[in-house]
Length: 481
Image (spheres, helix red, strand yellow):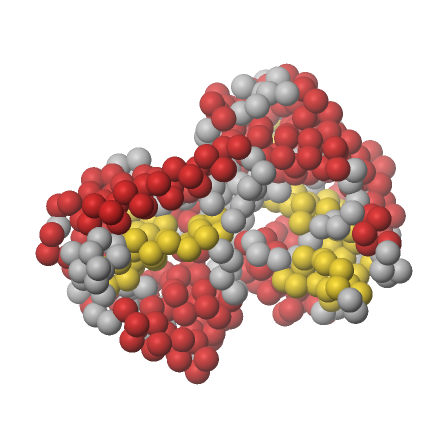
């Protein structure tokens, strides 16, 4: 069947140099975590598994180890791409995270329209293309992930016209009214780049529809039959493939003796306090300030819950070199301090805040301990934390408060839905979650668990790759190959 070549900005393991040589530790992130789980159960579906991503180390640092440039971990072959520091910064911090990220996540006022950033984006995509060509052999499957590599499908198509190429966007694709804000050469490059893929996947039907609409708005002669686009000789399949988690991994971990012991110790420390939990990357798209103000409003309006509930906010460090993220962190910490100062006592801290990465077992123990998960981003491609919380609720209780603008809201419809900009609605949802009966909780959690168990990461990856196989078989039939 050939190799599966996965391409993303980061490798699924962080690579570092130690006294004994190269060390590889699992990366934090939805894609890396999800696909590691898929690979563990699907290694026999391909001749071998390969992953191409940007190196954590500089080329000079890595070569000091005299290591093989290909790093093998758990039967996964990782190929590092070394970018010059200026290219890496202009590509990643510049075009990806200061232009595409804020625009596609509906923060157009945060976009930094520097033409030099797009030049670096082109350079990085071309460098990746050359690395793929080095790894690729006829019959391989190429699966490209996310907004970093939207030029790559057409670059590869020009070199490998018969290759099986798939692209999946993990963040939203914006409406045309936002997408058209990009300079013409940028938006034309992105559209033509994506159309080089055989299958173009999105998290939701809304995002897929936005993409199709943008293509057709820019070229009214483009044909769309509800499944395939027809433009410039290309006919990619476009559809929704909602990403998910390894349900069994989280559910089994929550039942393990180690995690149960951690939960018991945590519950002993907090006593009878009800626990609200948020786990997020530190990002302005997560609307942390809004939910903190929503929690503050809940405290103001519900004095009976003082000393009875605490909000545990766990933020994972992210993009600390970008000014907007630094400002966001300072504003969050100032607001937490103000709320705790106004409502806290010697015996009760309303908001417990940690800025760190939590290892897997501790994360599951927090999910298992929390009475409420407050997951209220202003915009999200999917949001896997909401699914991880549900999968970890082995007792069948708990309440999920979820933003209606998160991709996960399309599936987890038994959650308490809120508008992330409505502080009063967030406050009301907290009260609803705390007063919901165990029977009501069980009904909602069980329904969501059944869905996530059925539509897990295995189903997501298999569904996408099966669609790629179908398109490839169709092409072979048409062209007689």
